[in-house]
Length: 176
Image (cartoon, rainbow, N blue to C red):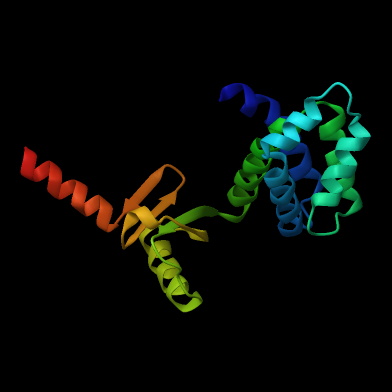
């Protein structure tokens, strides 16, 4: 959605410029706040005319698992007071993109039918970094419908070696 991206860009850029010394910790709390802000019930609560911005702020700070720094509290307060709470996930996404561009890395999501242990994930990450020719920040999400194998998404590139994809390829080949 272009409108959300347009609204989120100034917030992400300002946060990036203000936090160049400690990007990793800022990325952690921005992601946490974005996850909280993505909750539809919270957004419904925040949109209520009976609820003040201070109540929304207190609720979000209370939900946050980690103790928020003063910078995090100030940023959250600005986002809430400007009525941009629903844009917070997009702000986090753009902030991660700016952080990755500076470090020359990319986010990679590995979808797997089963849990992957740390040693196997390290091996997969190493081979993916060679394949995509850049440093990757790898995260894993479970998708049992893949049956087996993995599906990797790096930006707009997809590498699908799952059993489900192979079965689909066989189906297409047999029905063609």
